[in-house]
Length: 115
Image (cartoon, one colour):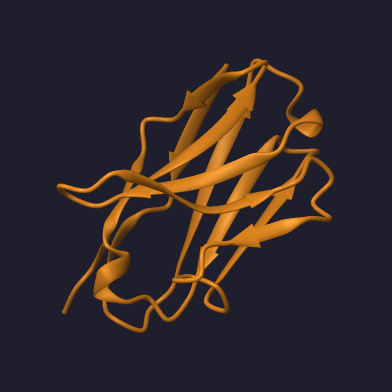
């Protein structure tokens, strides 16, 4: 299983970013996928998840209405579109797949929201 995130960067408050996670080594279209984030000194927290077919999407309250999780099963990729970014969104963002009771993580991509 390999998960590779990309798309992070430095953005001003109010800006947007689209994070991508390219997956390989498992049957991507069969599994829920999630995005987590970890701010400095804090625990890794769930941001959003999406069902295998994309029909079900859930968000943590702090990003609801500002973010969209979606997936392209033909490309084995899950995305997180984040808009109206705030400084408190600053964190390392991780892609997650839970397969047979085991959590798999990517290396993370840094998102920094600052002037």
